[in-house]
Image: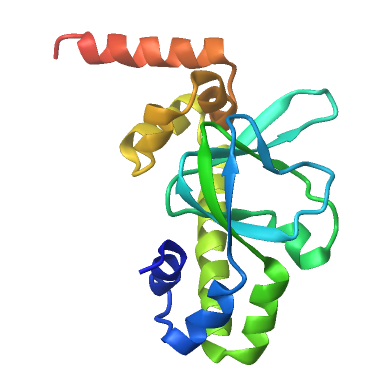
Length: 197
């Protein structure tokens, strides 16, 4: 099964006839390390599924500092939904952390399929709910947990790929701390674990 069809199948099954019009609009794109799929302040009319590699979502603030807010690995769907929905420039960038292969398609195609096939409309609703839950969980972490608690939550989560595959400066940014602060948090937790009971 095509990787994108398998991804959609997690939400809804597609018949061959339903899959065919989306399959006809797919393209494969290779990104080099540090190459953007989405660039802040530019329109971003496509979505993509990560086949291999890793990407980060970030924005550059008025102070010129980059702030990483999310990571994408294999079998993640990514894009600037805000830009796709409004046609406005994206408010953030999505950049490859390593050589990355994507399967891309225009959001306009998916929007047309929403109108033509009830199964795609159901997929769109379930996907939106899935992303809303993820966004809500991320906001809850940032608003209610201390940096140390956010790091501990990351250690306990299913997101261990972040710790295994992402450079430490981006992990620190994702947690809302400096790399130096992250090193201190890690050292403190290691010291706590080493203390005898």
